[in-house]
Image (cartoon, rainbow, N blue to C red; front, side, top):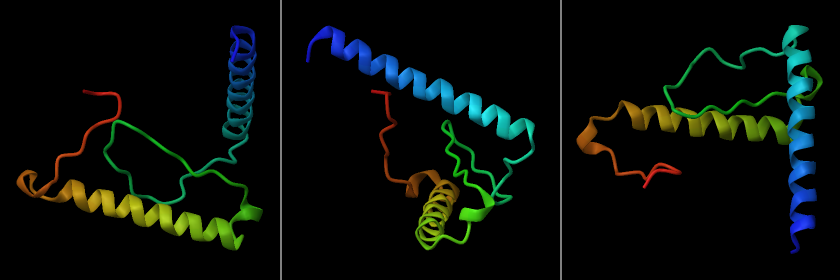
Length: 95
């Protein structure tokens, strides 16, 4: 891939990110973003599942949300284990 094509792809990706951030700011200011569940996990990373109320009953999204919550709970259970019981997990970006 030539340098110009790479630059164009990077520009489009950045434009999409800026658009998404602007949209999120509008949603936050309008009060349309909210916590999905009260539990919070201690982590160096954060992920959010954000969807409009009309999509909450969508079967595929409901299944994805259920899976995501189970993964989060499994992670929380793993964090609660004594240090000796935890398997070593490499951290992304850290070597």
